[in-house]
Length: 197
Image 1 (cartoon, rainbow, N blue to C red):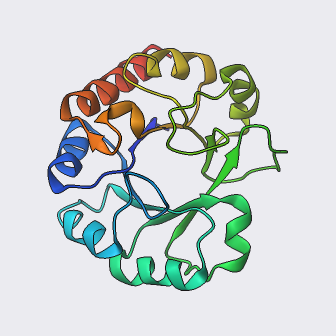
Image 2 (cartoon, helix red, strand yellow; image 1 turned 120 degrees about the vertical axis):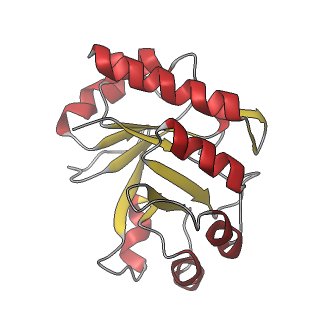
C-alpha cells in the first residue's frame, strides 16, 4: 500500500491544484476555529475540479451535528476527520469514511481502518513523539500528523513507518497562508522517503 499524503488547511483553488498535481492523495478543509478555517461553501467552490481519486477531507473538532450536516450537504466530503469521541453523536452516512483523531497522551484503543495520530492541539506545528508513534504504527492505518514539514518528513517516515502523513502549518509562509513551493517540497520529500523504505 502506498503512502497516503494529505495536505490540510487549504483555502484557495490554486493551492488545491498544486497539491493534487504534486501527488497528494487527500486534501483537507478545516471547519474548526483556526486561521485555516473555510466555510462549507468556500470548500465546495475550490474543490470542484478535484479528481475522484483524491479524497476531500472535512476536518472538524467537536462539531455539533447540525454543523456537520451543513458541511455534509455543501461539500459532500469523502471523509470526516475529527476526534474519536465525536463520532458517537454525529449522523454520518455510510458513503463517508471516518478518520478518527487520536491525540498524543490519550489512551489508544485498538484502532481499525484509517486514523490520525496528532499532537494535543491541532494546527500548532507541535511534533509528536516519533518513538511513541513508531510503537503504534505497526497496527496499521496511522496517518502521522503534528509538526511535519519538508525538512523533517523523510526522517519521520523512516522512523515511524506510518501509512500516511498529514501536513498543514508546515507548508505555510504565514499562519493560514499556504506556500506552493513548500507543498511541492513536502510531497517530493515524502515520496522519496517512501521509496527508501
